Length: 337
Image: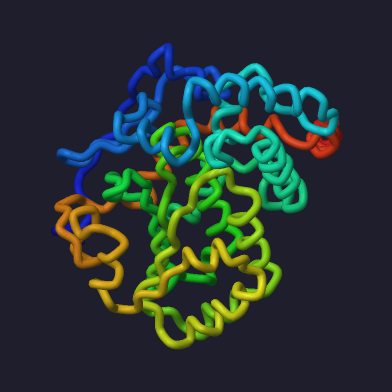
């Protein structure tokens, strides 16, 4: 049963194994761990399971014959691009983009350019984006990631943008920033790079006042982000408990959706059998008709975990489009004067 009150929890740290440090861009040597009874939550930098290795081979062309040449070719393409500042010597970072592109280096190169171009276009949102600066959205408790994965090994992100969302206290830009922070963390995990993630939008209690917060520019930003920018396999987006007025929100997003993403958005309403045809009840809490006896991970527990990873996010922010980075650096120097 999901507990109504927050369970007691503690936060500790664990050493990052030497072999796992290659997955990081900073020199952080400890990762936070949230303990909730029998459950623990941390960034999973461990080696992939045998099942996931099979998925990588069968779905992503991850074989000894493909990986090395693809990494080398992608490094060459990036080295020739004078507009980008990227960690060329970090093989794990290159693989992070190669996996969702099935080890086609040219496609991964385009993905990297899209990833950083999007950040530059929306620099007002991305500039100095750190968990420590986004406490407000975590305090609202409308974003969380389940401590377990689904039956296919995918991360489960839950957004509750109905009765839990106070739009006067938390803007949609803050919600977007929270999602970016979560997905940047997920991108570090080899298991998630291969298996991907699923998103549950719980829209129970959505009001007309909340509907008015959504605009066409915001809708286009979200769709562009998911379709072209995020180097992560977002396998399904499940819309549940949505009232009729949600149609007004979706109408804003629909014109920007291409067929691939549109086909991955599934509307379930209150039909739990429909949701369970995609996600096993064994992976879901009872509030969604599941049987997982796990405590809910609160927003503030996530904040404590990600806040301890600020150094890694700062390292992430040091890469991107060269002109954008130089402009940001000049701006900081101007403020110091």
